[in-house]
Length: 300
Image 1 (cartoon, helix red, strand yellow):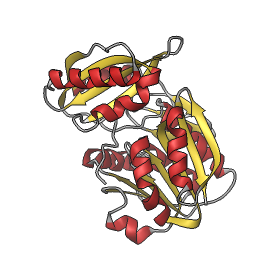
Image 2: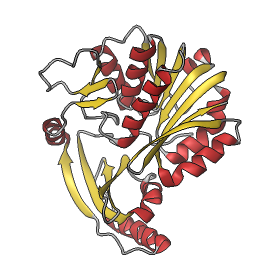
Image 3: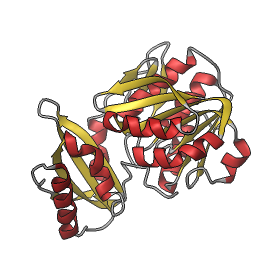
Image 4: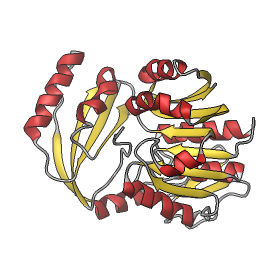
């Protein structure tokens, strides 16, 4: 069940390939490169013309001929113009400094997300989470993370949870947010050891070491998940393909009255992800949408 669930993973020095493509092809662009990259990320950069920009991250200089062949296949599949790929070597330190300068605090419902460079105190009555944009996905600015936090706050007004799992935790922002909302145990897991270390650091920074535990896990296979199940809330902000693959495993680890929050999918992928989970006996309770990204709240 191995999959890359860390779209912003950064090696100390890496190569970045950037290309733009119409939104009609955005849904399959990530799948075209997942097997050769450290990470794939895509964002709508021209809403009026429905253009998406994709970044492919590599730990070493990539084979541009191979990338060209994949782009040619992608353009032919969707009958769009062949994208031009730009290659650039990027040093992580420079990238992190740039992000820090451009990462202002975010207010998402009651959540106040801020980096270590922010000097002012969090607003009174807010739920503060300190997360620096960096070596793991999840600092609040992406539509999927935003929708997940909105979904968690919405759920907090409806019921309590006592055993929570964050599958594909990235930076740990959702696990920390859940712990602050429900004051209960949260297990945060990711296949990427770097993400787990970042999560552990963020847990400590946000003073949630008592309630939140981070662990490396290949899907739902780690011992901590087996010992902790069933979970009455499972949050999984990864990608559409692994969400579909994990559907049977999610249900096996979900309590009878449990709820699942699924994200990392485009609105165009919603029906596929929902169908995979309906086959497992789950139904849609609510959806949250931000631009082209969708978050689903499911229950048995």
